[in-house]
Image (cartoon, rainbow, N blue to C red; front, side, top):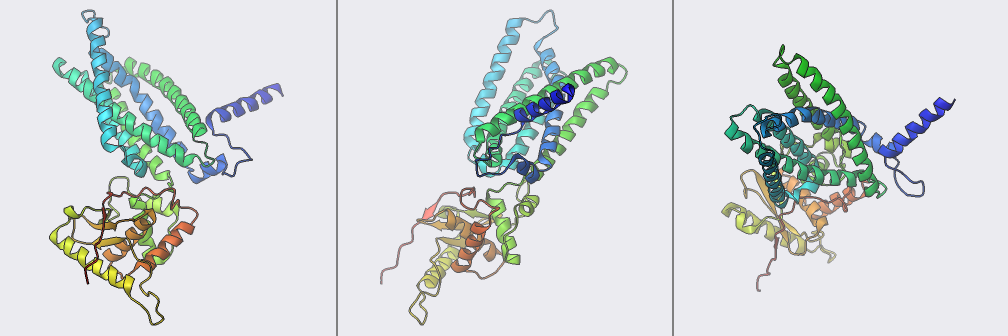
Length: 405
């Protein structure tokens, strides 16, 4: 009986240290709901983490051998100086990377998480093979791998914060972050333990099978990429980035209904904009438009003005609400542009994307249909149509001047 009680207490302690706490007094979803909404993500995320840590022992041993560990003629001061310069270059690379890419992390969490793991794999490969290079090439390769690790650290940290916010259904971001750190620590310890046993076993048979460590490392790398891809595909993000919003708009035009979170996330591409051709760019700069694009823009402006000022027989405007966007095709080789007018809001951006999707499908819609689409999307509880708006907006706004009578 005592052993059963101790087993239950140990299970409860492990659960409390790894899973977020949910209070009955909070109006939120439970931990079981989080797991049910992402049933496969924890499994694939754990496996991809294990693959990373299983390879770290091999890459670290290669780096230490290149720095002179085990070489009686090597000078500790020289190795320490190389280590310092390696860290400095990594810090500079991380600062430059975060400055150039920072705004995209929230909108494209899945893609940048894939990028972080892919760039980490590349860094591990370079570190592992650097010891095989000529002596003069070892240190540049060593520095390059650390710069790649810094890129991974920036992207992984930013996307981890975005995912923690996504999972924080009770506004408990701090608790989610703490438990995510505990899970990461547990996976790290397990990976290091298995990696140590595997490394010792590989060293014993390395002379007889010299290709086996390389096959082990490359096999784990392939598995890491596959597991990470499956983990990202299992996520069901409720925020609206450019790709998800365009997929929702296209589904609405085809069926008249708002697509579910599961359906859109399953169709979302992690390697570019393959499902979306062409891409609709919001908030374009007039100076980037071609002559054809400007001509189409002026024609659309005149049509919008005529629709807004049209009067029905009863004396009321028949064109519906005035729209805050202008659409042009032929402005870019691989996409079309939506020019936002002065005073446009996030709601107008959603309507503009819908209008752009309809125009590219050669369907006639107006501001009234775009308003109906936004109302349907806003009332669909699965999507965060307002607080989760992450559509890429280039930020340019245009003011139209009225012609003198």
